[in-house]
Length: 125
Image 1 (cartoon, rainbow, N blue to C red):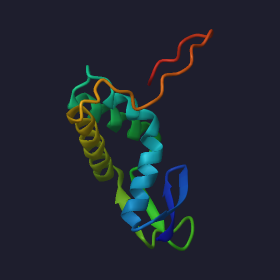
Image 2 (cartoon, one colour):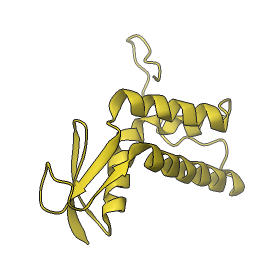
Image 3 (cartoon, rainbow, N blue to C red):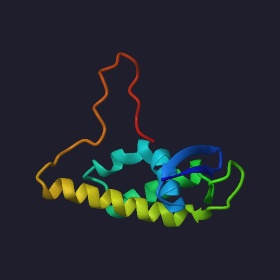
C-alpha cells in the first residue's frame, strides 16, 4: 500500500491505500461519517438520502479531492470530482443497508444510541 496525502477544501488526510481513488474515497467516508444515520431512517426515500448528502457536500466539501503521493498541496496522483465519489459512496451505503435488511437485521442502528442527557436534545442536521 502507498501513502497518500488527500485534500478537499480544509479537510486533509494522510492515508495508506491501494490507489489514489481509494484514498479519495477514504476522505469522503471520513467527511460523511456523521451522516450515516440517514440510512437508518426508514422514512427517508433514496432520493431524500441522496439530496441530504449533496447538501452536506455543498456545505462542507470543495468540488474536488486532490491526492498526492509526494505531499500536501500537489495533485500528482489525481483529482477526483466530489459528485462522482459521492454517488459511489451513496450506492455503497445503500447496498450495505440492503444487506442488513436481507440478513434480517432490521431495524438496526449504525450509530450507537447516545447516553441520556440533561441538556437540550441535539437534532441531526
